[in-house]
Length: 89
Image (cartoon, rainbow, N blue to C red; front, side, top):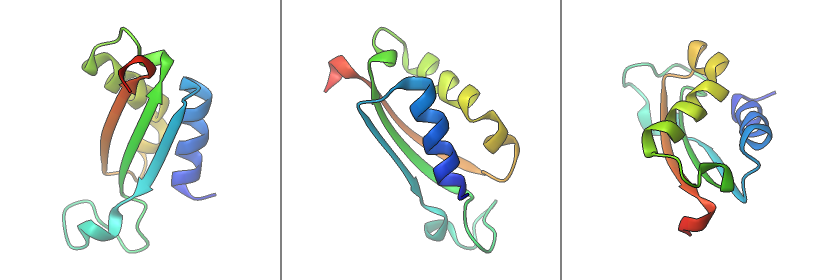
């Protein structure tokens, strides 16, 4: 299973989002640090979830990093985040 698919499943289970987008941006970083042939190294994640309501930006980021710990400890080099509570959209 592709890393993006694994991430999508984990994030959906952890945050029950109303919006979830996981995008592999690896090709945009070709030749940069952490990039490797085959991609799956640089991702951008957008989540809108009621689970984030009342949480600080730092707390949201920490929660996502905790949910994706295995991927971040593995081959994922960079993770861009756009995290919003459901009440913010």
